[in-house]
Amino acid sequence: RANGAVTVEVALRRCESCGRTTTRYFCCGSRTKPLLFCSKCGREVREKCPQHPDADVVRYRQIMLDIRELIKEAFESLGQGYDISGLKGVIGLTSRDKTPEPLEKGILRAKYGLSVFKDGTIRFDSTNTVLTHFKPREIGTSVEKLRELGYTHDIYGKELTSDDQLLELKVQDIILPKEAGDHFLRVAGFIDELLEKFYGLEPYYNAKKPEDLIGHIFLTISPHTFVANAVRLIGFTDASVVMAHPFIHAAKRRNADGDEDSIILGLDALLNFSRSYLPNKPGGREDAPLLLVTQIDLEYVDDETYNIETVDRYPLEFFEATWRYEDPSNVKIRTVGSDFKKGEVKMSFTVPVRSLEAPRMCRYRKLNTMAEKLEAHVALEAKIRAVDLEDSLSRALSHHFIRDIAGNLRKFSQQQFRCMRCNAKYRRVPLSGRCEKCGGELNLTVHRGTAIKYLIPTAEIINKYGIKGYLEHRVMLLQEEADQMFSRGNQSKLELLEEEKPRKFGLSSFL
Ligand SMILES: [Zn+2]
Ligand SMILES: [Zn+2]
Ligand SMILES: [Zn+2]
Image (cartoon, rainbow, N blue to C red; front, top):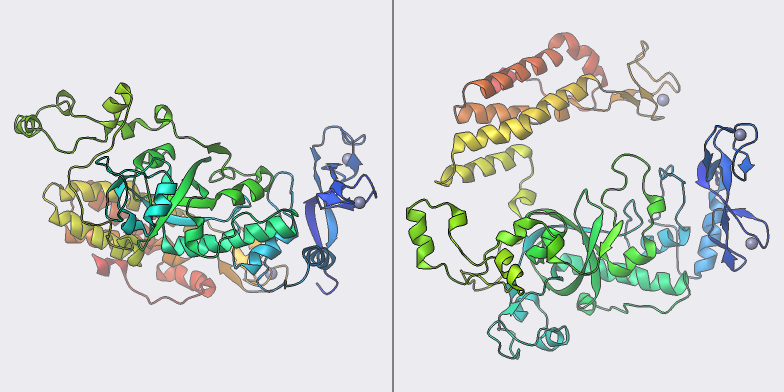
């Protein structure tokens, strides 16, 4: 708006010195106090609204906020050298108390080209993999630095003097991709400037290059969980993957590799995370570091970890037992679990490798469409003698694809319609075919492409690998359903609204 005023629901506070009502946490050099409002009439209350004693009491109220003035104040408090370019906001706050983050933090993040996660932290997301041993040269960290970090001896007990010696990874140490190094260098710059300009403290990281971050603490957290684990960075590789000890992955409630990890710079989490920012909806507290584990205790990590073998060679009796189809529990081989019971876990390996070098990016990210991913997956399985292809395909289809297709078709038929101009949503298309509020054009919120994304590759697989019976019929029924939904009779109505005019083809041509 021209005058910079917006209407928002936001948590309000009061300065006890000057009496000003504000969204800021500090005023006149001291901390402001939160205010309470009646959720029904919006008046400021102590405990309950005298007129609406049953109404909820909330920390926010709808007000006209002079955004321009607030931004000006924030720029002034930071000093010279900032501009508004790259600064983005949200339309509204979805947290319970609608507590805003100080604008200065956003301005500083924008300066470093960083964006923020829902909980106030800056994330680096990456696939993870397990690692138990490494050589200094593989992670680009000097022998001196590694000795400083506690890697004084190699796995054979020899003093560490060369970058070619093999070391056992310490449980809470991680190795990041080089791209993460560049990212966190910017995060560290942001944090240092935040400390100086916003908190009035000394900078902490003083990092000039990614290597300067080695030895610093980071947090790692898995999707859909709320426990973060503290880890230490010890080096970088060219691979697009976070390498960490299997115990770390287990502590994050993940079974050890190929999963997604989120990494946060330690001080970023401590300074900028707040529960108050988390959306007040189911799942809103997921992916947020509500708890922090500073020291991994094997007692509390997933038992799956206990099954990792710690031997450097399999004994003859192990091979003999395979001939007898012996129950695995009858063959005693040293594992993490058995070592742990005895007191000390010492990781080992049976097959040495020349270097950590491996594919640098996972195939899953290289392949674009779902059809390509599925094709590659199936082609690999077809080559592996131990895989019963039909069984594995049936499982993949029934557990993932068929459920998705059925769900997406349902979503398509029950979808809402959205005005492209004013964003108004409609349960059904008004008879006029246009937005009732502004006359704008309406569009689908779920597109036909989304609805049938998996249908074609699934039908192709059923056909190509000759899968018969229940699954074949289930897919045929889904195709009929889709055929009806997108048939000529319905097409005029739907296509009127469809953004991209797709080529028309009969689904049966894919069978
Ligand atoms: Zn004040
Ligand atoms: Zn009231
Ligand atoms: Zn509209």
